[in-house]
Image 1 (cartoon, rainbow, N blue to C red):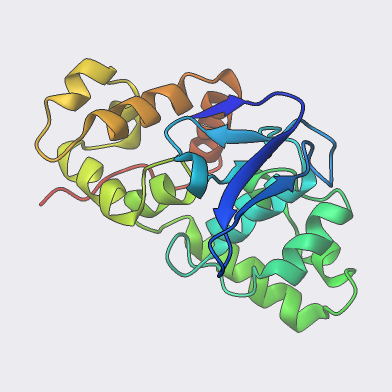
Image 2 (cartoon, one colour; image 1 turned 180 degrees about the vertical axis):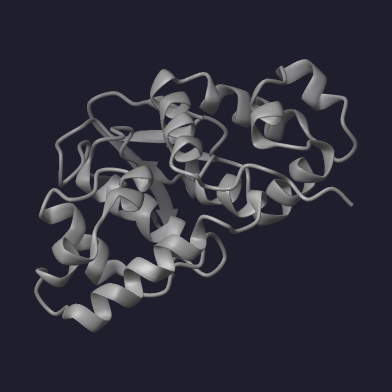
Length: 212
């Protein structure tokens, strides 16, 4: 969860001589111009300033790289360079649109040929069968890392069932904290995120959790 900040903000540090130094950060995102935001529970001297605009190209690229990473959906070839090309050419605006790509349009990108395009396409296709906890982790929900995603998937048969569960009930599950439950329900409460989830499922991405 994030909170928007005012016009200008600064952070106070002490240099090697012990003197107080105020370091001011830019108030807006360098890429899309949106007012930066800070995690609501961030400590003043350890703040992480974020762009809250989901359509910001930098945010889109970051989300795609995370989705493709080995720890998430493990889509080989989906590195920063290729993701930047896909976003820059307007071919992909979110993770669901990866599953609409075709070999022909991939092969037309600079630095790719028919063979490399086919390999990336095959990696995308293979990711549709990955474990559901990887899908949950890949969505980049705050406070839901790989361990938390696996925990949730041990409690539910499908991601649909998980997302349909309210915050209070989630908090009663073994191992689920107030922060985890609140973050997941807050994220899924956004209509844009709910639509993304529906599109991923419709495209055939696995939403079934393997029960132990």
